[in-house]
Image (cartoon, rainbow, N blue to C red):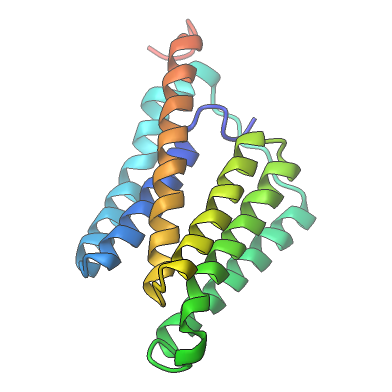
Length: 179
C-alpha cells in the first residue's frame, strides 16, 4: 500500500515545508539545493531502508488515476504561475490566495485519502482548510500560500516520519533477499 512505509509522505512533506518556509525566508537557492538533494538521495534511502523489507515491486497505476493526478498538477501549476505573474496585481483578491491554495491542497488530499483509503489524508485536508482560513483572517495576502504550504508540509512530514518509524520497527529485513 502506498504510504504504508511513510517515505513518500515524509519526502513530500519535507519538500513542501522547505519550499513554503524557504520562500517566506526569501531563500530560493536553498530550496533548489534541498530539492536536488532529496531527488538524489530518495532512491538510495528506499534501496537501503525500504526495499530490503518489502522487496522491489512497482505497480502500474490505472490510466484514469494518472489523468486525475496530471489534472491536479496542472491546476497547481496554473495557480503557481498565476501567483507569480499577478503577485502585485489584483490587490482586492490578494487575501484569497492562502484560502485558495488551502482549498486546492484540501481537494487533492481529500481525493488521495478517499481514492487510496488513507484516512490520515482527510485530517491533512482539514488542516489545509483551517490554515487557509487562518491566513485569510490574518490578512496574509500572497504569503498565505506559503504559510499553508509550510504548515501542511510540516504536518505531512511528521506523519510520514512516524509511519516510517513504525514501518521500520514492524518490518524486519527479508532474509535471503538482500545481503
